[in-house]
Image (cartoon, rainbow, N blue to C red; front, side, top):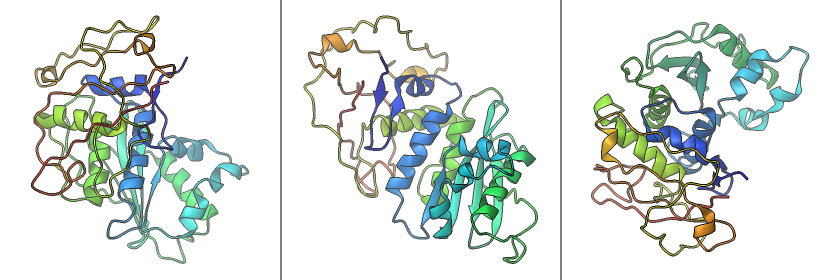
Length: 294
């Protein structure tokens, strides 16, 4: 049986992916895909758009595709032909994540990451091939020949495992400059913020998104037993991450509902004002929303 969150109607996210946020470890492509989809919904009407967001697994598929293969190059083709102002992607590298931004107004491609690496040539060739197959003529439209490394990407300590979160933070700050810039001292805040977003624990701004299911009765505060065959949530070793309450896996048989739906426990974190999570610049607005786990 699969256990998944559905924070938005078109997003299915496995519980396993959310657990990567519980400790100072790398996040996976499924979590990144879900956050990019949230960005697409929330920031669709912001000034400077429209924007498009490329799922992380599209890039390696375009990289490895044969020139004779046409099907994968039609993905997002209609969006590209509508000429968005920018396209954003999180690039999968060797045990690392980077940020790729295609600016269709300035006709440039920018790359950055938290370890100051270079963009993999194969990834660059793949996305350029996809753009060419969908009507972009780099020479006629006078695109820049060099990749720019001008993105304001925070640096991470070696081994921190926050490269994916930093990549998402970099994209969001381009869309919304009021978003707090990632820092190692505030890594707990940024991890918990993403956890609230992907599990539907908060109202998103701008453009609040309605819950996909009605509120449920509160779960009993007694310690819940793990689902048979599941593993325990990894224990945090970071002093800052230790401030959060470790999530527990809920046994759906104890909840009294056939679907096994429940709401995630509150997380005790000192949040500052957040333009994505707050209704305005002066008040915090956290609204309890339920998640479908099935």
